[in-house]
Amino acid sequence: MIKPIRLGVNIDHVATIRNARGGHHPDPVRAARIAIAAGADGITAHLREDRRHISDDDIAALVATCTVPLNLEMAATAEMLQIALRFKPHAVCLVPERREERTTEGGLDAAGGASHLRPFVDELTGQGIAVTLFIEPAPSQVEAAAALAAHAVEFHTGRYCHAAAGEARAAELARITAAAQQGRRLGLECHAGHGLTYESVAPIARIAEIVELNIGHFLIGEAVFDGLAATVACMRALMSEARASADPAP
Image 1 (tube, one colour):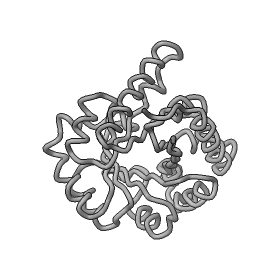
Image 2 (image 1 turned 135 degrees about the horizontal axis):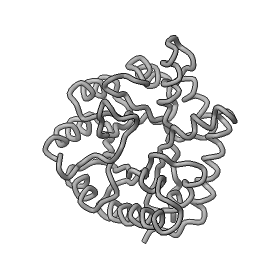
Image 3 (image 1 turned 90 degrees about the vertical axis):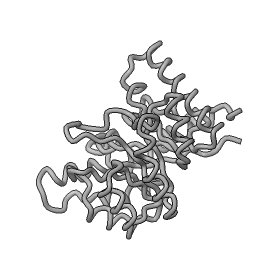
Image 4 (image 1 turned 135 degrees about the vertical axis):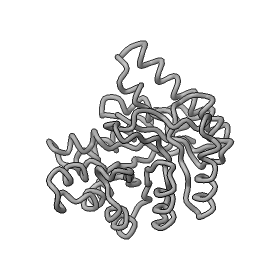
């Protein structure tokens, strides 16, 4: 039986718009409530070291009010670890972070950085927080995530989304599919995200081993034209439709 696929809505860029003018509007916590009512299974927020969008106060408010799991994206730093341990979100997704990047540009090097990551995974897990590693869909990275005893991996879908339609995109899709199959064999829960749109989401949602998609920028952008509830509901419907036609995982 194919597992249902969850939609995590990333609300970072509601905070980006708020911070462009200062003040309190638009409120990312209100966005979270709307997304949940429209079908989101979880809320994702990335607390960056430079606080360019989500703030510490936002995390506190989300923890206090979210009726679905909160996934805190963060860099593997001492400061972020202490924040996660203080707020105790449902899950933490460890991501690479460079101050000069506009958005996350690729996956975490779990293979090359295992010794640095292990204390973070161990401490968060020991406090009952599920740990996800945001990685490239590559065999060495999946193996490293399993060796670190992460709960889940989230595959970076940016290359797939930005590839030209045809052979290039098909090759990236095959790479993600193979990584998800490997992850499942190794006991990892498999997620995916970054750059997914209405047009690109269905093939990823049809990968039976992937049980969660985290989508943000596209949904917030489309919400300018159609409203957040409508965009979340549309993405939820596209994912569910694609999932219904997926082949069962072997």
